[in-house]
Amino acid sequence: MIKQNIFTGFLTGIAANIAGVILYVSLLSNSELDATINDAIANDYLGKIIALGAVLNFVPFFVFLKKKQNYHARGVLLATVSVAIGVAIFKFF
Image 1 (cartoon, one colour):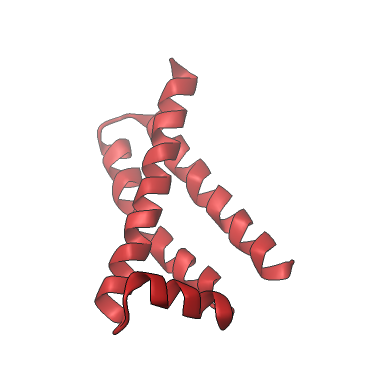
Image 2 (cartoon, one colour):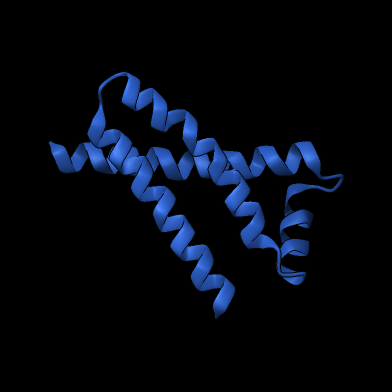
C-alpha cells in the first residue's frame, strides 16, 4: 500500500511537471509547443523550461500534505528530484 501511494504521488508529480511545461510554453511563448521545444533543444535551454515547469509540483505536494497523505507527497518530491537529476544529466552530457 505504501509503495502504491508513493507511485501515485510520483505519477502526479510527473503529470504536474508536464502540465507546468505546457502551461509555461503556452503562456509565455509566441510559437506552438513543438516549435518551442525544438528551439529549446537546438539552443540548449530545454532544462530551464523543464525546471520552470516543475514549479507546478508545489500544488499537489502541498495538497497532499494538507490532506495528510504523506506518502503521496513523498512521491511528488521523488518526481521533482528525479526530474532535477534528469535535467542535470541532460545538461552535462
